Length: 198
Image (cartoon, rainbow, N blue to C red; front, side):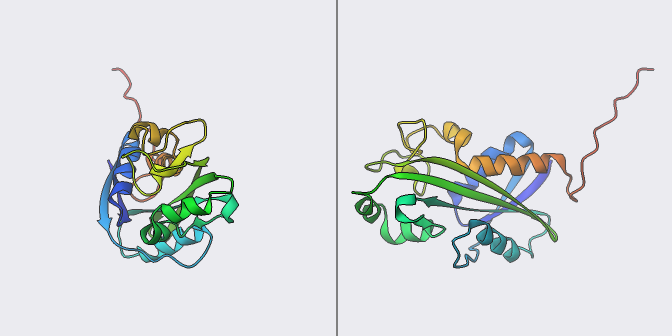
């Protein structure tokens, strides 16, 4: 079984990563470490910076970054989503959206590192900001984000349902497919030869 080290301070993300990679036969270890986040509006650049910061971790290493993007607020809070939530909570965001369109999207990028080689996997889900927070599942902005085609927030729907359609699940499934095709050294797995009948 291939083992991947997920580096993050977010226990909620770790639980999602572990559940999403399990079907690919991937074992996930959690390394709790705060990683640098450069001042940039580009999630890919943030993930590359995180991957550069985990060069000391051996074997397969996984990092992830995500953000809530609201077009009527010029993409705010974007890559600063976690920081803004820690400072503000939901209240000021609701105030800003009182007379603005509530369309939004969650974007994520998962990054894998093995030695000097890196891979990036994007994911996105569109939806809207709910009029009020609702639900107890999930974490972060889950209580205020209603995915397209649904009437409940990410925090109201079962975790398994969220993992079927979320931005993070899209990125991690792509990462899982790659990992399932490679070995611990990053080489393509060779299919086992069937033994011929004697």
